Length: 398
Ligand code: ADP
Ligand code: MG
Image (tube, rainbow, N blue to C red; front, side, top):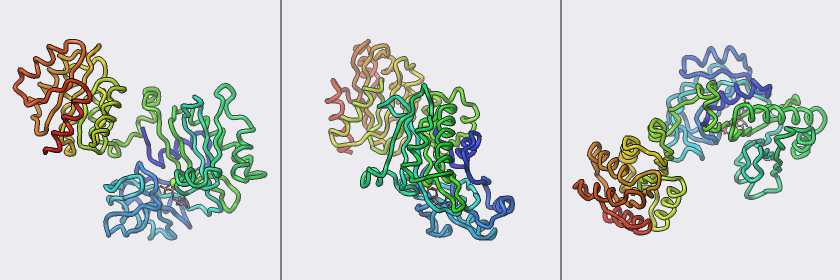
């Protein structure tokens, strides 16, 4: 689960991480009071969307100007103007895709006098099974490009969970960023606070880009992006309360109601599969035969007919779906349950696109009988290869 920058900064502030003062607003009318509360003389008006690259992003609407989603304001009137222009408009950044994202919240923040911009992030590193930090002098810009072009400018290290952050980690960061004296001390302090926040809140990823040095010698988190481990959200009610479902895919929200593992993708073949491994293989084989999947969907081992119907509804509601592939290996999950679910779903929501069903395993004969006697226009397939070829051929025939 992701949260907005201003929420992330509030979480980090609880752990003592230095951040700027700011006020979140939802309506242009709130801009003046927010700007007055902060006092100036420099403000930054920051679009709050769940995507990075806002500074270099562009608004679609002319009313918002073509200027970026993060703007420096030198007067209260400017803050008001920017708020008026940005709220309700669609910001397109390198991370939003062409469709962009509508800006419904702004964060009005104290403007900082920046001397340097660094990059600092922490993530769960599966290779070392530890939390790793990534740090670079090349902050404020696209870290992927830095990693690609000048990997020597990126330093990474992991934290032993038994000891936590040690003084030498702070020295590593200070050295990587070329900081000495009091700033080196601040760097160590920030690393240990970020680590404490990361562990306490079950984060998956925490990115500070940029981490700045101000002209008066303070280290500060000027941007913050956090994603949390969804499996641990049950023990963080305060974090769950920060969820902004308008930033999430509607189909994914619907899927979470049915407790389905569903991820929206941008292809044209809707997939319903049981088991994450088989689902991944199904996506791969669709690609192999030259088309792209519209989703990842694992209906799980013990899916009921109701769950299968729910899954089918979500797939058919996606306007990009030109064909559907059901691929079930019945083990705990029985083929006849899936077949009944598919038939019930098709009867309930109709079927405008070709449907290929491949069933194998427990109760497969009964499953096939249910489908063939349903009178539905279903293309049966014998194995995964056959199924993928059939659905690809079917959607190409249009
Ligand atoms: P994004 O990464 O989405 O572009 P950032 O929050 O990193 O958004 O802002 C982009 C840039 O805007 C920063 O690299 C920094 O140069 C500038 N900026 C952001 N917040 C402030 C602030 N409070 N004061 C001064 N400059 C800022
Ligand atoms: Mg940033």
